[in-house]
Image (tube, rainbow, N blue to C red; front, side):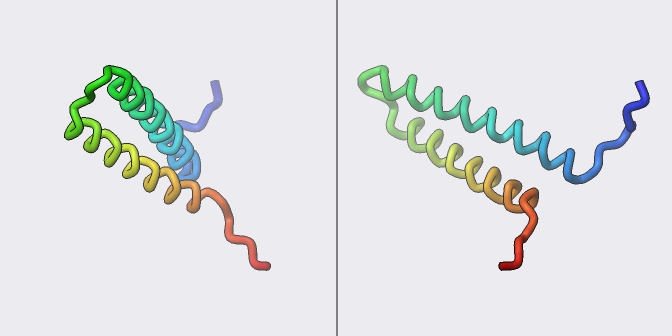
Length: 72
């Protein structure tokens, strides 16, 4: 029970990254389910795909912050 009461910046990024990945998976499942209906609402489908792409951009940005630069 001696866990620190505050998270460091890297830990917060890792938590945020996991949340974004979960949201991305959920959107992927929702898009797939909507496409399976036969005649999906194209506007809703477009909005979900745009939101999924935005999440992917955020995921990549956080991954870049967590991976240290290696000088070759």
